[in-house]
Amino acid sequence: MAWVDGMGDAMADRAGVWGPQRRLRNSVPHLAGESTGSFANRLAHAHGLELGAFLDRVGTGRQPVNPRLPSLAELYVNRAALDNLAVLSGRTPHQLQLALPNLQERFLLSGDDAARWQWPFEAREGHVVRCCDLCAGARGVDEAAWLLWPDQWRVCLRHRRFTDDHRGQGPSVIRLDGLEEVVRAHTERLRLERRFGTAGTELFADGFQVVARWWARMPSMWSWTQRAWQVGLEAQELRTAPLVIYPEAIQLAREMLRYEQRAENTRAVRAAWVEEVQQLMAGWGLEEVDGWSELVQWLDHHSSPAPASSAAGRRRRRELAVGHSQLAGPSGSLRERSCME
Ligand SMILES: [Zn+2]
Image 1 (tube, rainbow, N blue to C red):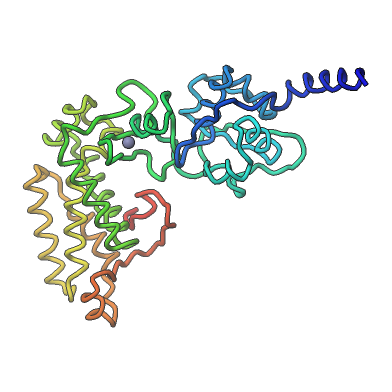
Image 2: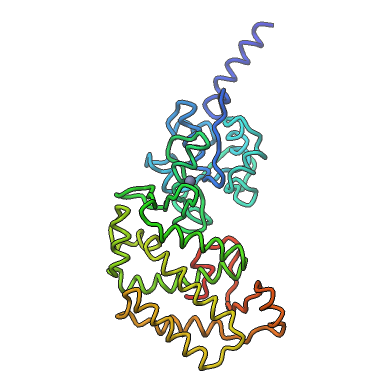
């Protein structure tokens, strides 16, 4: 029955405008933790389409006006649009949901009717951070890609790259080859987090937040300036701060750990600790910054007496008496994980 076949073709053509036309011959690899917008952008190019034309096949939504949008914001879809995205990528919806964090159930837009998507400028959780170019390359991805990350920056230890959510002038992937001390600091942070779990994560977050405050007061410290120049970044710029303060942040976290592991925290012990940290600061070149208020604030949050099972705790060396008043989620940013306001 020829007329039925013909009608089928016509319907398929019409469907092509509003729904997926065809799946790809070769599937586009995804990157662990990739943003949906980044994946959709690469999928569009694999189909030989501009992002806007590709999104027409995913569903309806307000068209992005900025071609650099994948780096700026995140794509959210409803269930029908997820189905379309799955067809276009040659995967099942479930496979896509496992691969891309922002396609998980709790992030789907409401409404099961027509396929639709949104592209707000802020990710609902975390930040859109550039993926390390060598990690991407190893997965067969040779164009820019972005990941969702709790903080606005991240370090790839394997390839010694620092990336962030920066969108303006300057390098987007920073090689850490010349900054051995930053690589060492990151390695030590990972060790601290492995060994002490949540307590280790929170201690690093505290050390980082405190040193970040000192950076804000004296961003011109010579070793911070030197580190920035070494990797081609502007000294004293906000995006540079996490990178250049890393060695001092881990040193302070180490001092905080030392304090936490003490059996007693009498007034004298606390005073001696502040004194020691201030000497450390002077050694860094921060003698003009009075760190007293941050250190005392941190001590106030960590002044609860060691738990009753302190002897056992010390033996196991895993139970720290971290006295955070606020509890951060397991995937929070450093700011959320720190007890420093
Ligand atoms: Zn990498």
